[in-house]
Structures are given as structure tokens and as C-alpha cells.
Amino acid sequence: MADEKRGVVAFLTRRHGGRRIDLADVLTYLYLLAGVVVMFGPVVWLVMSSFKAQSNLFDFPPSFLPQKQDTVVVEGYEQPLPLYDITFADGTTRQLAQVRRVGLQVTMVDPAQPETEPLELNIRELAGRREVKRVFFDLSNYSGGVQSFPFFTYLRNSVVITVVATLVTLLINSMAAYGLSKFHYRGRDTIFLIMISTLMVPISVILIPAFLVITKVGWNNSLWGVIIPGAATPTGVFLLRQYMLTIPDELLESARIDGATEWRIYWQIILPLTSPALAVLTIFSVMWRWNDFLWPLIVLNRSELFTLQVGLNAFQGALNVQWHYILAMTVLTLLPITVVFALLQRYITTGIATTGMK
Image (cartoon, rainbow, N blue to C red):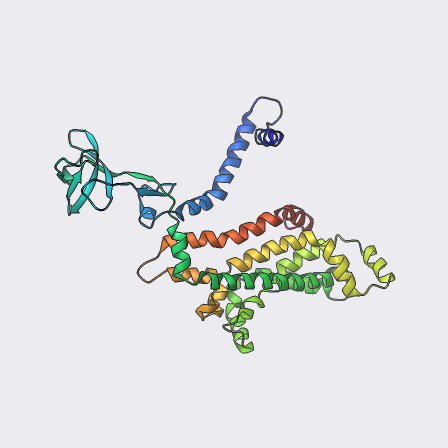
């Protein structure tokens, strides 16, 4: 363990050239630090905000850590009273508990001396009045958010769509890539170029035709209507084809000489050797399908079929947006993506570097 810590410290404090830190080291670490802040800063802020109470979200200046106004139990009062730091006009400061407030008039009591007469103060006559806050992680955003809408139903729909769509995407794209990389026939390159050129077509252009086709087939308000249209992706075919081109053709010829069928070559030779590229496509497909919002919103109208992303839209009312629930549920929806990325991240570098998707 100690060796691992020394290895991590040595890795994080590596220097360019000799032992002394030079200008290149400083600029490099500043650049990397800025990258870390830009990449992870919003995510960390999102996680911290998901523990804030709704009133705490709109505090100015905003606070990084979730906070809650401190209260104190004062003898003679049934409920805990909120604490304030009061600065009087003469510059003295006292910590008082607020009994009541009517307009600009507040009644304050000293919690250390509850037997004394409460003070009647006018807020305008005070030099300062600040809430006493403490760090508090409010878990009610998560429990309340889960109870406010059918979270587990939407979670089940999202998992079904993501898993089935990813498996179908891997199957269809790998078979197409196999045909475009290991078979020689007239028009193969033309088909590949036409397929790649569809990357330049904006998704918004094909939404209406795709919706009409889905409606004609009868998959409107069906999970299959969300899964099938995006199963074949030019990005996936391109990624897998480029990787399959690196597999020697002699290996396939040897298998054919030994009597292996094309299906067996595809299933037992091509797919295992393409596992790094398949892992990368799996990550992409899971991210695409899990985060997809627009297409499920168009296809699905019945609430029992909503995905999590569409279900989060329910917290946005006409007059009020429940940001504390949206933030907490957004953090929950990010967890599966994070787990998948953590499990398959070691394949990303290998897969992308060997497929030309740099």
C-alpha cells in the first residue's frame, strides 16, 4: 500500500527534464488542472447541489457545499428557533434566535439568556442580519424524488431499452462491418461511402419520416419503436469495420480450409478478436440510449412507458420547476453510465487507437 502511494505521488509530481520544476512543468500542471476543473467541475457541482434544499439552490452568493440554517431550542418555546448573526448600528454583533417576523419588525431572543425580555428590532435599523448556516446533506431530495414519480417503472424501461438496443446494435453493426471488411464484391466501397455520408445528415431531418414509419409499422407507444430505429449506426459500422481490417485474411482462409462456415468464422473468430472495438461501441451505445430524450419523447405518449430521461420532464411544471428533485434524480440517472464506463474504460484507448477514431 505504501509503495502504491509512493507510486501515485511520484506519478503526479513527475517533472520535465531534471529534478527542478521548470516553466514547462508549471504550464503543464496548470493546463491539466484547468482541464480537470472544466471536465469535472460541473459534475461535482451537480452532485453537491443535489443535496441542497430548494431554498438553498437560489442563495446568492451561491455556496459549494449544501447548507442549512442552524436552529436552537430555547426554553419556553415549543419549536426550534432559527439563528441569526445580528450586527447592530454601533458595530456590536450578537447571535440571536428569531421568534417571529412581521414585515420589517422582528422579535429576537438570546438563546444563552432565554429569561431576558425578547428584543423588538427593525431590520432597516440593523447594520447586518445574516443567517447562521451549517453544512447539511439533505437526503430528502432523493427520497422525495423517488416517491414523486414512478421511478422504478421508468428505470425498468430505461434498462430494457438500453440493454436490448445495445445488444441489437452490436449484432447488426458487427455483421455489417464483417460484410464490408472481409468480403470482396462490386460496389462494396460505394456502399460504405454512402453509409458514412449519412453521418452528415442531421438527426432532426429524419425525425418525422422515422416517426411516420414507426406509426405505420404499429410501434408507436412501444419500446420497440425506441429500440429499432437507432439499431444500425454508421459510427458503429465504421468503428468495427476499421478494426476488422486489421485482422489478417489468412486467418479466415485457414478457417474456411478447415471447413468452418461463415457464421462460425463470424461468431468464433471475428467477434472475439474484435472485443476491444465492441467494448468501445458498447460504451457509446449505452451512452446514446440511456441519455436519449427526444426520440422517446416523440414515440412514447403513455406514462407507464416513459424512460427516466422523459420522466424527469414531469418535474417541470408550467409555473414551478422542482429543481431539487431534478438534480437528485439526474445524479441517479448518471450512476449506471458511470458504472459502465468504469468497467469498460480500459478498452477505450485500445479500441479508439486501433480504429482510427482519434
